Amino acid sequence: MSKLLHIGLGKCGSKFLQREIFPKIAEKTKINYIPVSRNNFFEINTSKIKFHFFENYKNIEKLLPNDFIFSYEVLFSHGWEFSRIESSFNYIKNNFSNDTIILIVIRNPYNLLNSIYCQSIHHMKIVKPENFFYIDDKETNIRVKDRFNLYNFNYSKLISLYESYFKKVVVVKYEDLNKLDFLKKIFNLDNEFIEQLRTNKKYHNRSISKFGINFILFLNKYFNVEKSQTYIKKLIKPSNKLIDKIKNKILSQFLLYNFFMYKFDKIVPYSKYFIKTKHIPLNLKEEIKKYENLKI
Image 1 (cartoon, rainbow, N blue to C red):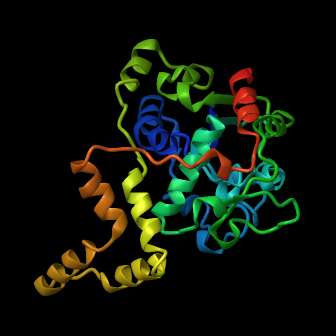
Image 2 (cartoon, helix red, strand yellow):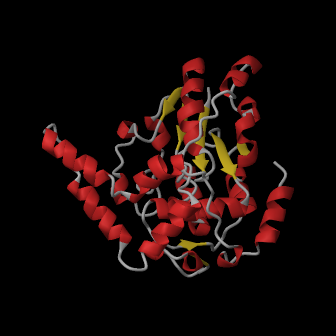
């Protein structure tokens, strides 16, 4: 019996695992892979979630098959903030037995936080880089004003929480994810099959380029980009009428995310955006050192 719960972190190769790896393992081993999109197992209204996917449930594992792979990168903490990792752990603990295998993928702290900031711009939650990260141990809400609270940011603490209850916690560094060596700790897979999986190195969720992010930040100085993009999306409505299809095609050209991801960044040489370290109120050198020395 194999029960795998992949809880995150976000921006650590989750889409790669969910689209390229887990479905193939499920097909090979006959273990049930349950994408979040197949919410029929849970019937959870995600729009009403306040803090956690399982916040209103207990022993939800009983709804699942005996063998399963469930992957959702917000399970470790809704909004990816570490401020509520203890609460998230308790929700998971109340819903899964301790023989469930927990998979946690972590990443170089600076690269993770930089990617989270870029993701925010993708979703048109536009905050100046110098205002995005903050630390507030009294804040009880998540992603307040689209900012990111760094209170309680601690990989070791996160891992220790899950090791305190679950019998097997597999931790992988994002930089080693493509090697897929961790799969041997979870599944009974032969080397030949794992080698085949290693060929699936498709890139998912690449961020908008440096130029694109700086351009969006520039536009936002003069008008509310998020509101304008939301308004354009509302005007784009599915239709079989030719005139509506033409209208939708024209309107979609004004969606900044689509323009940079699928046009500009494919023509112009790509350059990644990097937030200045001074805008992240952590001792990044110390955090990176702890990450590099973290024994897994």
